[in-house]
Image 1 (spheres, rainbow over the protein chains, first blue to last red):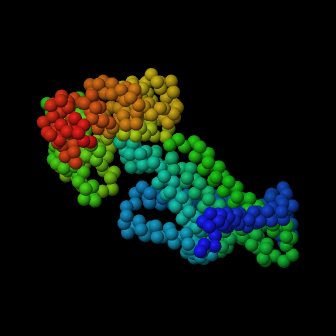
Image 2: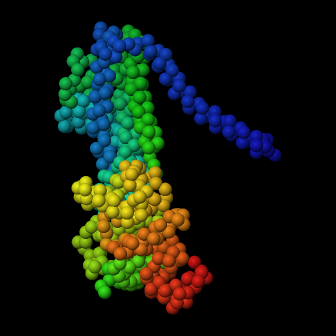
Image 3: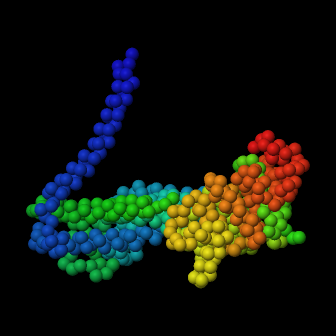
Length: 284
Length: 252
């Protein structure tokens, strides 16, 4: 005996699945709303443009914002050439051999490494072994390494999605493999590659653990002047003022969280805009 | 007369054990329009792609035999395959413009060959479009996207794109598939002009088209050449029973 008819089961299933899917939205909305609600009042011109004062409890977070921007750029410089190079190799050159399988395995594992392990690796490798010290350079390289898997996999996907016919036509008029990649494949894969880069950056730049030992400073009186300097950075700053500074006004903590959130959200937004703009322009 | 292309005992296997071509021998003469026809999967396109070594792009495949182009073995070690493809152009069944303008499509191959002189490029663009019977329709909008063209125009653009390199041989792999009858007849008419300057090897859209355009033709079946001959011999007085059955529409 059936308790419910097929139609009723169908309705129940649809309802449950829709509910579960909707539940996903709730925590995202709550986080954003809560941070906006509590943080908005802290945002002011002074907050965005002044260094902290009076044991971080007053003034602004400009050095941390600047540091995060610098680290974003540094991470991009570190991850883009390696990431795109690896993606081109995997998509266009790699055969099915031991080397390729090793590379793919390495990328999968790279994506699964906990961020604190990246931080420790960066400390051992870049800070100590290469003697870059605790610096923007060491931090950027660590974050770049962490961004690589995302950049590689999205770039490879973008390259593979360029129609095979473009390659065939290019070869048929006498272009070499590199000319074909350079003039047909990469330009047409670029929107996807850029999207992947920005998403990877926005992910990495919110991380605290990788910069903990490699670049971030609790407080610096001066702004960094070279890549060998330390810098303050938003995620680490937020971590410090939330856990290490007694008597920190809640408003400042939420304000910092809001700035960090806006920073990563705007990167994601830019990536989405680029993707949809390019998709509209795409003709095939 | 010396053949432009001499295909000598060519066999081709895909890795999976399927034999695509079996011991093909053919001579193609300068300035003729040679048609390879037969049912689907008889090996016509495979043979065509061997002639400019686009077959190199296949991940698998084993080729035996020789293909001589002006007496030179194109599979010989040291052959400049990129130069070969400039001298033996190709048009595909699906009209495939590259993303970019009409002008960029036509000059792509030339630029890849290192030709940058604007006057040379302009002149080649105009001439190739005229030869492909497209000049009058697009001469005022060369900067427009190639994707804005109609299907028939796109295919003539692809023809012009291979002609812009001033090849010696043009390989046409079913160039009128998907075109309406009017576009098809425009392309077919342009073939008469083209063979004055080029040697053409064509896989036709249909047996009727083969009969309309061919100077000489080869009937292919299951990777083999059944019969080769002049248009009249093959389509009116076929020697082989299988050719006769195919030409008269009993199978295929």
